[in-house]
Length: 331
Image (cartoon, rainbow, N blue to C red; front, side, top):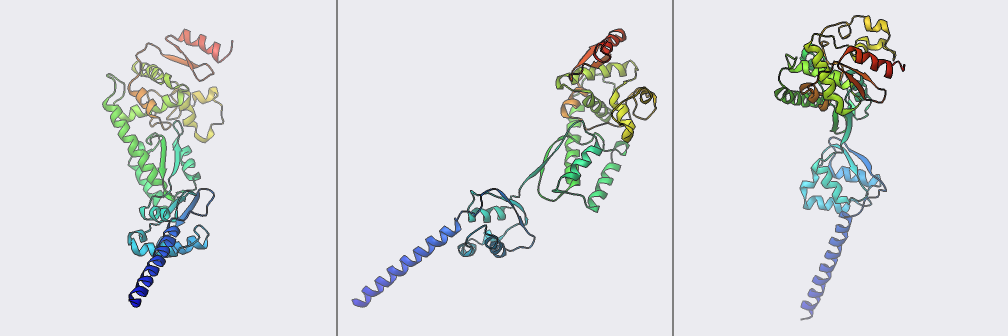
């Protein structure tokens, strides 16, 4: 009887010890991270789960890793950590980390590609982002894409938006997404365009949209400005829009348009050429595209900036000249 009694005591004692050990390890698994603010953390390619836990402990992110390593034995799926860049938060537990790394839910970065800027300006924005890379292969793919486009120009063919991506994404991936988005939106706009527009193709509408974008300071004026330009095209009048002069001047533009610039022939100067320029002159927004394909029905042929972002619209040259004197010449 004494032996049975002692065996029972030993079993109970071992059970209590085992439960205490399990509770201790469970606390380790759910331990809070030693962080006071959000921290970006890099899991390297080929790094094992155990090696990662060692690094986290050495770096002081977690206090102990023994319980976590035991947890890997119980849940081997937690060992399938994925390389990438992650955001660690003070509110996370050690187990949250392993689950984050196995899901591969990397930290998302973003870049806003703004309407009205041209491709050269977009390229500078892309190159300035520390998490966007330009490799030789990336540059080659970009050249191939550009050569496949109308006029071998990417101008206007990327949809302005905020794009999200993971660390060290190649620029071509973002460019392709912006290009696909533009193709889809342009196709839809072309299919739902107004009747009797002076465009033979959706691309010509895209060119018009880029001009509208550059001319517009107030969003609600876009369809009205579009109506003016459509009227001028229908009457075989030159568009005579300053942004086309600026685009045609390229690096020679110093901030001012002079009379000689208005008379200097370039493929884009709509004071000289008839009809539309050969390519878009900027990246147009969805609103500008909508305006190009659905202009306001109007008899207006002119508009001039009032200096506050809005425009004075006129039906006749006489009215327009008076508006120019009032708002531009201040007489």
